[in-house]
Length: 158
Image (cartoon, rainbow, N blue to C red; front, side, top):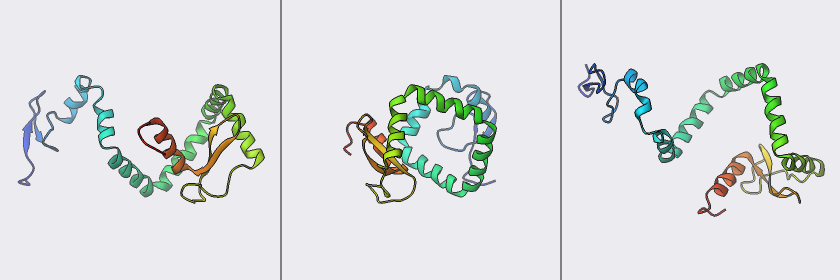
């Protein structure tokens, strides 16, 4: 047995098991069973504190399993066309001005050939600053997501 691996007793069932981290108090079964007693905001707080690390891990996983994930996505789309149609219909009904603005942008050809922030030519989108006047900028999907993150947090400047 590895000398660094330490045994401990679960606080709930008193079974002796190996500890994965110094903060671990419960075995896996008891943790799942007693999860409701934990702070409801624990996982959201953990995510906020470790957001960059978790996003990097997620991106790395997506890179490694890209083909597998694309295949699963295609299968899901084929099996759930009615759900996708319903989601699209609800979105268009909820935000008619966005749907009309998107159509006008496509028709008028307002979208540029590269991102105005990073000069990328992949996954271009049109970020509307005013839906009625078709004002906005062409950005890639990554920059578009960053813009919306900044808009949610007023302390950050664009």
